Length: 127
Length: 127
DNA sequence: TCTAAAGTAGTAATTATTACTACTTACAAT
DNA sequence: ATTGTAAGTAGTAATAATTACTACTTTAGA
Image (cartoon, helix red, strand yellow):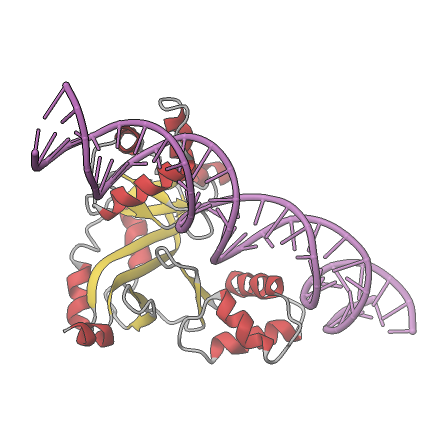
């Protein structure tokens, strides 16, 4: 990848956010630093960064994709109440790709897991 | 849910297919039985069937959603080569929602997991 | 410097999905 | 059986998310 300021700013933006932003959220943040950046540029670079393994894409049921800089083994919870994505720290799924590979005849490259439920804050509010 | 022939045919279609079809694939199949069915009707009914727990929706990275009649505990593999979705029979993830619930402060309602990799057939072809 | 490939802004197009509207059907109570 | 009404439908329009296109610009190596 050749250097570009746009990509650098996009990566920094994903890096310093912990709210698992959507492409559009990143676009609006980056607009403050590069006022004429194009939405297409944001999408292209986010996908490029995912392809190069610098960030992760998270699929959300019935909602747009999110991006995450944290590459460490962890999972996500999508709260159906506040629509936020939270990190889940668990070792339960460690090495699951290898396990599945041994159990099946498929080559496993990666996996995507998203739990759907209610976060702590929303849970307290409702009670 | 009130009876409708459209919904019945849509459900039957998902039931007797094992290829995890997209909404559009179901639409085209159902068109043969109900030539004037509307794509919107297919989408509405598929989502309704998901909400009522009669079928499952599967999220695929960078591809459209699929539908599955098999409600039994199983996972999916998305082959990046032939773009097909395969079933994975494994007990590794059995009861994972409860485990995560105990480890965190979240209420887990469900989870979505899709493995990405190469299926048996594609793997053999490439070698 | 010069050059070629990679990258960009701006816009148009595409894809998947949902919303809207007037008409139709299912079904429960008369 | 008839009827009221809520749910469902076709057809169309609209929306949202994402990708493609084009002419211009930047990066980085020769």
